Image (cartoon, rainbow, N blue to C red; front, side, top):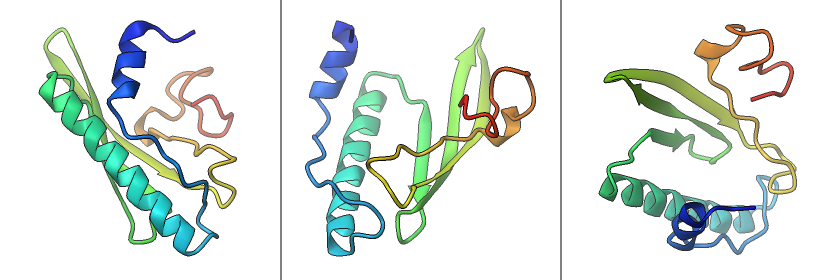
Length: 117
């Protein structure tokens, strides 16, 4: 079940309508435009509500994404690199998001190799 805050947040972000992946040529370009518009809207909404927590950018093809994410706890800011590749079978297969600095820190969590992240 989705809580009301999440529903409200999602209602403010443009929906993605094009089902395409990196192998789909011009359809992929259209999907990337939709992805960028949704991300820009989401980031702007987060800034407006003082809930800014990540920055992302991609390579020219939109197949490799990287950036920073952060969390503030007890007035300390913890910042991490974030990266992921778009699978060739996207959007059927979701990307696996990696926070490389946390890899191997805990046996059960943050394991890129075990698909727990």
